[in-house]
Image 1: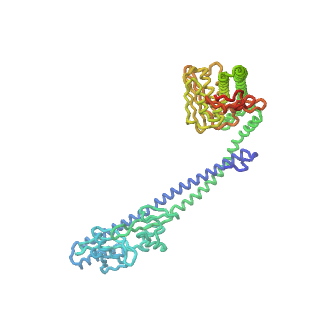
Image 2: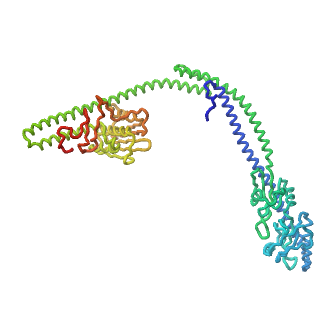
Length: 627
């Protein structure tokens, strides 16, 4: 998040910034608190409203069950009393049924449905009792299934004129020769819906039968689908508009019964309380901002006063007055800041000395590198002068002597040419050795792995070479060159000083580094002891020039171990450890292409002395077989 422009303005003081930070913190904290508290409170209110509304549904559920039990007990009691002295005739049975239904209906005014169902035929009779609603005849199978139970039951059944009714059924088989069902109840219509509304005190009632609203206190809801999942009884649901609904089951999936439920719909009873709490929260936020802003201003003044003094001292130190110290008399956070700044000032003064010493060390390293280059040039010049140049002089003298000998005795051609060939081979061997020490061409042509094979193939000391992966991938040329010469230096040191019987060289490459490991089983030495350590210094300079790390461990009788890690991405300003030789008179760099192989065709030999010498240009070259 980008700070505002006034915040970044150089002239803006710390006091308005601290004050603005405090106020912003108060605002954010207040908003977060209000949001979280509102959500938590709202969730608790919703849970409480659901609990309260669930209790209303439980009360209605218990009332419906109680009405069913009461009506069933009344029907059974009246039937038992009237059947105490049965007379056995069919007319007497009809009279007993009529009297039973009359007594039950008289005891409960809302019961507007009465009738007797003949079980075997399914026919319904009212026996002359006044009724506004008739029951649709059940099938004989359904009536038989109901008659199997002697106790009464509550059922939702269809009516003759359409719609459904909630009835209580009593199976009686002692009223006559035929088993019968005594039925009494009331229709599920607007009257029943309003009666449920009065009993529960909710906002709206809907009566659902078989997934359709058959009656509701809102007439527009009749024939529409239920507002909630009516099959989830005993579970309070919350609608999308925030209202609550709960269904109380009436019917069931069984013979001569239909799944039905009473839906209780009500607004959130605690919504008004939530609104009042929201207004209270807003007032609390305003008060918090006013009080908090005043306290923030006072606290900012206290904090910024010592910071002004620290700023003045830091400005003087930045101008170069390192002798000016910070006031650390305080023990609070500002005092600890002053103490840290004072330590920083002292450390800055100490760093000046370290920087001087590091500059001197860099100068020493530069001098060492220049000295190494000069020594290498001197060695190469000495090799050329004492070796190749002398051999060329001898070869020139041999050519003159051969010419005189052939003039005296032409038959000595084979002997003379063999002597010249041996002299040339010796000269080429010296040239290979000098070129190999100078810079192996195989390193740039084929990579680090083949170059190390070529380096160790000529050694009498057994060497174990391990590459991971094998073959090694090509990496940056500087890394390959410095790794090669590091291994070469380690090998030379082992041969000269270690008295080792075996040498182990391992090279591994991953995504970030090239690792070099050289280990011998020689006598070892004390790396920190007295003595000339020019080779170790040279290796360390070579690794550090590329930003790498060198670790050398050794002890008497335990051999020597050299570990180095070269980063594969070259650091900026690194020094290349490869051969860099200034040529006098603008000569091109030295080229040696005959290294790394014991035998090479003569046509691939190119040696630069003062100019490039090609095939066929050396004296006596023609007719001489390649060495």
